[in-house]
Image 1 (cartoon, helix red, strand yellow):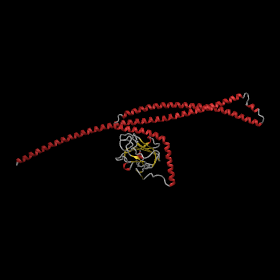
Image 2: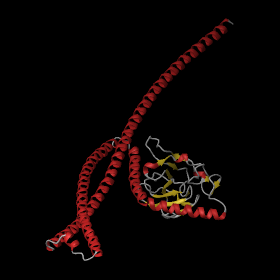
Image 3: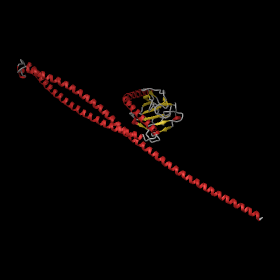
Image 4: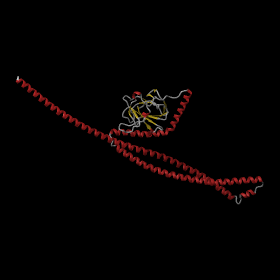
Length: 414
């Protein structure tokens, strides 16, 4: 019995020792794992810190690019103003020169006439106005001669005064001309100086762009191309501004007359519409079908760069119809190989402009100057121009519809 008990006790001691050893081993393993976990956490934190630092550095580079872009825009704006001023001054100089030439011609004619009068007076010898009066044979003749003498004297006085006036006007015009030429020279010098600063800012910007990642550089290139395209669009809009505004007024007047005669007014600003679903309080619908109306990019890219538009890029959107968000006139409908690709600008009855970009090749269904109605299909969603994938780039602009007039489309959509 004692032997059995001893065996059992020995077995228990061995089991306890084994269990204790295993616990120690497990504890060591757990400690190792905990240490490894702590080490990994430390490495992860280092990686996060490094990532944050890299992101911050990129953000700083992008901020520098944006700041310089703002300077470039200011320089370009000032240069455009100077170009306008130079053009106006050139017109003023041309007008002044034409005026001087005309006044000089009038002056020469008047001077010639005065000289003829002096010659005629000289050739008449000693005959004076008094001689003419004394030669009168009757009272009627006297009155007639007196009237004639008065008219001649007044004509001579007017002629001399006219010559003096012409001479003064010529001198004034020449002074104005000289002032305009000096101002023109000053404006040209200022433009040259501004152009040097602009070039310097562009070189500085390129230096910062070189520091960006390839993805950010692609994005920056896209932004630059869009900015260049918008300059051309701005120039086109300014050229056609009066023409399109006149056409819009004609449509409004025609619509008003039609509504008055039929006893009802135009489209409602609430409810539903064909195309992009519900109508917002601003009178706009979505420019794409409701199922694809999720906005994938807002006014700023994820990098912090200014976008100035919203993108609709849900899965399956390629080839979907693009709708006019409200009634209006097609301002521009063009197909580019860069920047906006296939794009359309519409001037709406409320004075706002909308821009639709990257449409499918060959899908534009409207033409410049055409009247469109809310919900009317104008093209299809695509990926033309500077685009990384199928989506609709959508802008809203206030009058006069230029690049700097872009506002947040979210404020106008349902």
